[in-house]
Amino acid sequence: MAERREGICPYLHVDRETGKYICRAASTEVNPLIYPCLGNFFECPAYARAVREGIPAKPEEKVAEEKPVEKPVEELAPPPPPRPEVPLMESLETPVLGKLTSLEEKLRQADSMWQTYTEQVLKTVTEWLELRREVESRLYRVERLLELYRQKIEECTVRLELGLLRSENVDTEDYMSRLREKLEALTKLKEELETRLQNIDAHLQDHRKRIQLILARPEFTKYRTALTKLEELWREGRVDEKVYKRLKRELSYVLPE
Image (tube, rainbow, N blue to C red):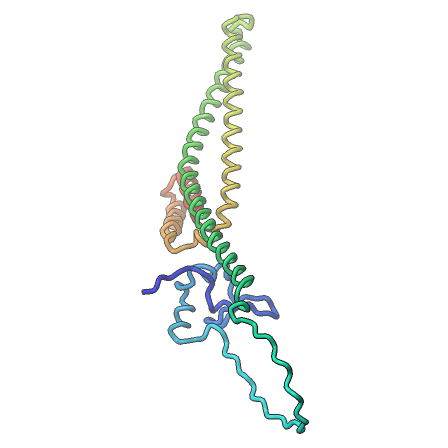
């Protein structure tokens, strides 16, 4: 069996008047960014049917029959002097062939770069899902510590107001000062983690949109099925809210919008 290579579908046509993309195999307008016209078009059902039925990729041009036109008899003129013969090879050589070779090489480079890019984005998405869970776990612990330090500071303040502690006590002032320092440090850490988490989410979302066709491949069906099942469990009250939100976010990352 001949090796199937990705490229441009021979049945894809651009209408010169409207600028729309037309599929000759299906006789309809198509969007080549959604359908595999610019990728592995061998998997397209319309392409397979057209090849099977012998539908030509280009319309057959009809040549109108020309009726012979009677010309008046003219006196024969002397033949023109012979022109110097141009070698056939020279007329077909560069620069056209050189330009074609250069363009083909650029296309091969673009294919290689696109494959490397999509693989890198998919790898980064998977890595970020793991790291995101770690960041959220750290945020949860930071929030618990913040609440603990706020309670301790509030308790000390109330004790001072009730006269159970002396404001001039060095140990009390030092203890309150250390609590406030830890509270401030934890607050800054919480803000930084939340900001960087949001920034990475937004940045990665831009890359995911660029490879949306890759994310729409059939192998991602299991993720769509899992997301549907998760929604059903959530509606039935069989999944905790935090677990539901975390799993939904992870599944949504590997699926196109």
